Length: 86
Image 1 (cartoon, rainbow, N blue to C red):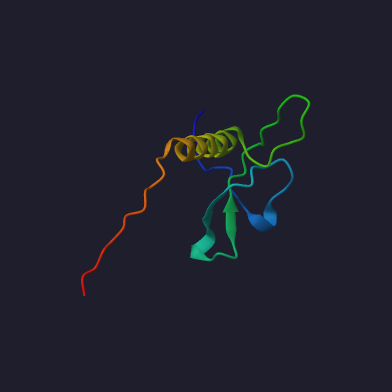
Image 2 (spheres, rainbow, N blue to C red; image 1 turned 120 degrees about the vertical axis):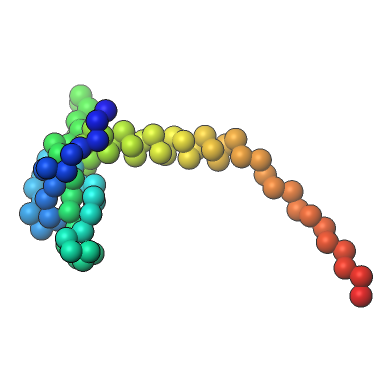
């Protein structure tokens, strides 16, 4: 799965259905003018269109899976008692 090269990026106001909605940057640093990826979206057989291209869809699910695994394997910190002498 190769990262998109950014050649198809589109401004949010120019975005059309079927283009990846992942925000990849901002025009002149202005948060009101977001650039979207613009690559064709991922579609699984028998499912409705995704909002992301294959690359960003994979990233989203990989990150979520890693986070879930990390949460399950993390040790629960134990409370430590602190005794202070006056």
